Amino acid sequence: MSADLHWLGASDAVRAFAAKTLSPVDLLQALLARIDRLDPALNVFIRRDDEAALAAARAAEAEIGAGRIRGALHGVPVGIKDIIDVAGLPTTCHSAVLRDSIASTDAACVAKLRQAGAIVIGKLATHEFAIGGPSFDLPFPPARNPWNRDHHPGGSSSGSGAGLAAGFFPLALGTDTGGSIRNPASACGIVGLKPTYGLVSRRGVFPLAFSLDHVGPMTRNVADNALLLDCLAGHDPADSGSAVAPRSHYAAQLERGVRGLRIGFVRHFHEADLIADPEVAVALDEVARTLAAEGADIRTISLPTLGEFAAVNRVILTSEAWSIHAPWLRSRPGDYGKLARQRLAAGAFLQAGDLLAAQRQRKQMIAAVETALRDVDILLCASSMDPASRIEDADSTGRTYPRQARTPFNVTGHPALAMMAGLSHSGLPLSVQFAGRYFDEATVLRVARAWERAAGTDRMHPA
Amino acid sequence: MDTVLMEALARLSGLDKMLAEYPDDLAAAFASATGHRDVMMAPDAADAEPWPPMRAGEGL
Image 1 (cartoon, one colour):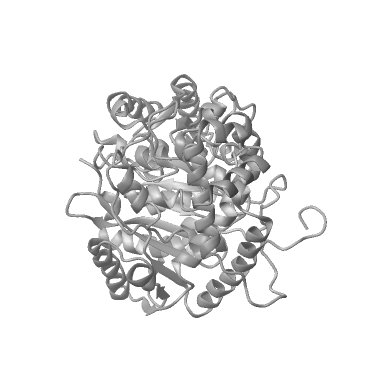
Image 2 (cartoon, helix red, strand yellow; image 1 turned 90 degrees about the horizontal axis):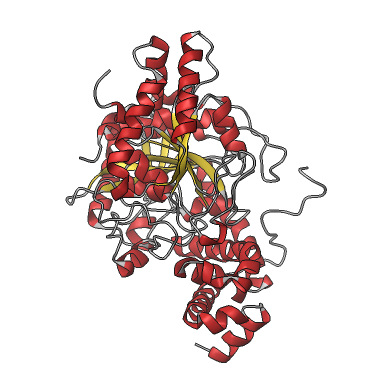
């Protein structure tokens, strides 16, 4: 194998394990050595679990050697966002509030990964309770962007995005309530998918907002994203939001291309509702041109404005989050960082009528997106309107974080994927987003793969 | 900002401790909530129902 084991994807690693050209122990040791060297400057990990991971890698090596393949991810390391329970490890939510909270059982998504043979490598940085960050007043420092450590990596699944871009692990789990998988995917130039609401169980994941929360796969390439989703998807009767969805094999359609697909380009998101950075706008046009050249039929379509979507998302998110955090905000406000304290307390000032108005508006927005998806197969739109800002520039971060087009698909629950659309002149990732029909992640991933294959985004890594 | 209203609502919500220790953060939270409410529009139709819908029983 080459010396660049840290850029090896999960699909390729599994093939190499089966061919006995690489062992899970060798891969894990190479990654741990890289983490030792680089993580002190990136702050990806809140908690490493080297001993357990090495024991699991040795067991995987023996099992694979004996021909006993436990599942599609046997021997592959995975990082877990620290709002997701891993048995025996703390789930701190990056907060002093839960600093000593040890999980007794695996979250459903972690259990599925273990069943598939994946190796949990540790718990990853997040924004506090997936809402307050990037912050410097928490028990752990914020993750930084491997493309430029002076810039933020997006959030709230910040450690997941930064760790993938840094070559620390080929797979990670994130969560997405207002864009928290797709923001780090955009900032770090990796692939982040928010699946359809209910496709992946949220059992064992600390909630931010019940009706907006999603768990999803984060990877460096589209094939690995499909592979990880294949292992995560499925009904969980213990999660009240879990759906009984038609079973798909997400990786099977990846190479079918986009010929004949109708793609709706939601231009007003970045040309009127918010004015994107010119480099982002150029990159989005290039994605559309490339997919047209590959045979897709690109049409401009309209949805409700980003302002309307954002208002509905904020009212619902803040109301639901308040219902969870009110007891701690009343008794222990000093255990929260400033950003989380400000954002979570806002729910105290919203009324029942505000929440109901937002939920009623939400139904109309779902109808609007469903109508659009009768005329097209996929939506193409912006994800972040800007490259990542400097992490210590709170004003710039506060201004650019809300300049995004991700919340529409938390409000409606449609699957949405963000990935790299190119690099800015300053060497930071630019991003694009694809969204699809409910439970049609296969087509979302297929379009993403067509763009990745044409643009070579899976081969672009930080220096 | 209506400070009197903010403080009254904070106390009504049980946030006396936060009001005493972090008044600026509470003021920022109040401004944020007011901003959310100002841009929210309710549907015109009286029979426009919310999502998620009410469902009987568990998981039906």
